[in-house]
Length: 324
Ligand code: DP6
Image (cartoon, rainbow, N blue to C red; front, side, top):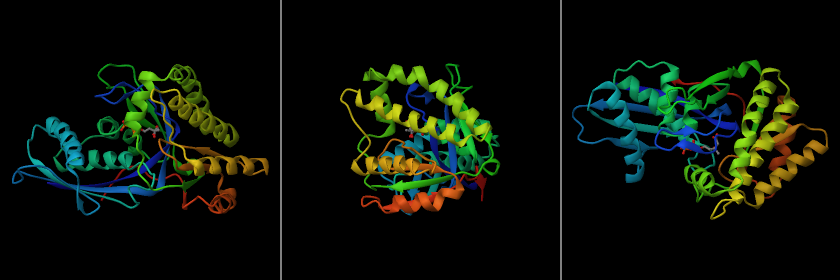
């Protein structure tokens, strides 16, 4: 019983930041994302009664025991849903370096949810796959779909109303995302730990909660009406608010480094020069810059010139889940 699936990474336009239930990965707020065309994870899962344990091979290497335990925990859910107790071999490959600052857990758990359920004989629709992927990593629930995607936080305690759904197809509005790599060193504070510490200790977290729903609604409206300036200004301000909460945490922390600030300044100066470009930053120092296709080369060239920028990758909205 074998199946292979592919899912693409996504970047958050309105951030998921904070959980109301940690074991069910239920978020405090609605979020919005773009699935990217360039970066994906391909995962093959094979269940067999012959296997005594699960095996997880990541980019052709046996995963660490910590990673293995996470995968087994996730596969336990799939086994629970199917009533079968077989173990599995999981082969997962990213087409981008895992430490390059892209959210591999989002594409990783989306691809795993699809391949594992199919391999064990379950036939789940996208909504159920989104709910399942969420239980591996929250942002993974959005990588089930292509284009522009929202994650409804839901209200229910059991999480049955917390899943992603498409807002706009990628082809409905082509935007460019210049992904700027300033470091490939893995971050010391994971998004999971960072959001938990912020919820528990930052006095600024209540400010986040007070404003994020309006950001979400306005950004969604800007998407639907193709209002680029409005979308850009909201996503930039939403990212800054998220990062501001970390400064108030105890102990405080910050995901940015010097080069992150250089990129922010460059984006601001591009705007003063009449090029509409806006930045967003997830839980790490790397920056994603949103612009319109007519400006993508100019934006990319100006960012590539910065001395501390290691690389830039030009992305567009990408597809949802596929089975290979
Ligand atoms: C800042 O989905 O990686 O990128 O649910 O704990 O696995 P867990 O966290 P994760 O958090 C992503 C946080 C973010 C914003 C976002 O993607 O919306």
